[in-house]
Image 1 (cartoon, rainbow, N blue to C red):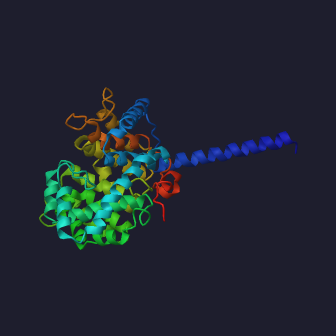
Image 2: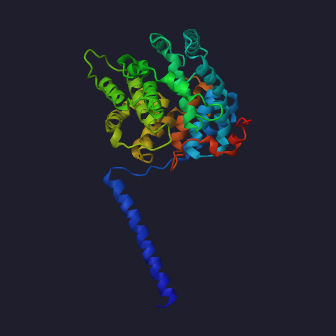
Image 3: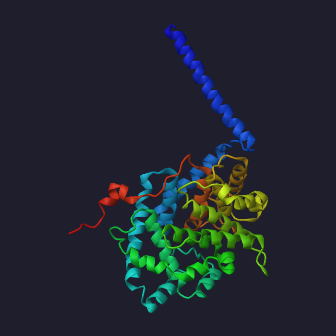
Length: 374
């Protein structure tokens, strides 16, 4: 066969293969009731405005907020330019964790640490914000806040691949702190779930990842009972807190944007989102709307009509004159608004793949900072 005819045949077969693949994709989307939904030009502009605002001001934020933003952008992009705030964070908390490891058996020390953690000005992993209700809840559990704080900090260290090395070699003591039997009761307590359910979901997966305890099924069952009002004498669950708790069950399972999740595994959660989508859009906050959208994205549904509706809801909340989504009361303090705005940015720019970690020992800049062994 002449070469030109052979090449034409190859081209025809190649085109047919590509057409078949596209046809299969279209039929698959049609069969599942999904269709691709592209971002609008105004949504692209919104995402860029938020990103520019936050990154221009990043180093004016607290170490916690710098780490929060940079960790999420790293897991979305894999770019090493986001490493410095995370490296600075673990070095900063390393000193406190070392003190906790050395002094945790001293009841007076635990009490002082707990009082500091529950103080209004204290920057912690406990996500207390201005909520006196959450603080009062934790006060009723004695010094448990100390154990929960260590649990959270140690898991961030673990997720960056440095637990057990260098400055972070007090693993036995830290595990002893977080292997606190009260945590097992705390995370399934109905009052805790209704007030602090999102954080309880996070703690459950942190315990699992440290190999301390597997309470995922027990927590999910307890949360489901509260969501469905199945517990005798239960009162209506605040809608926003209920949805917020459900999102965190999924987000924690993804190890906070490090890996996809299976919709089938959390079918009852996604069914709840599907049934209540209008109320989620109309009756909750922008951060909750964004988290629901991210839950769909983690299940491979980033480009669906459902997520498009959630993105449009966020776009309606965006104020271009300040380049951000303000709080529901209209205030727009930048550091306090980082959380809702980075979530919106993530949903608007969801990647084809996620980037776990970072595993800091993989990077030369981290290895150069390690203490020299004499």
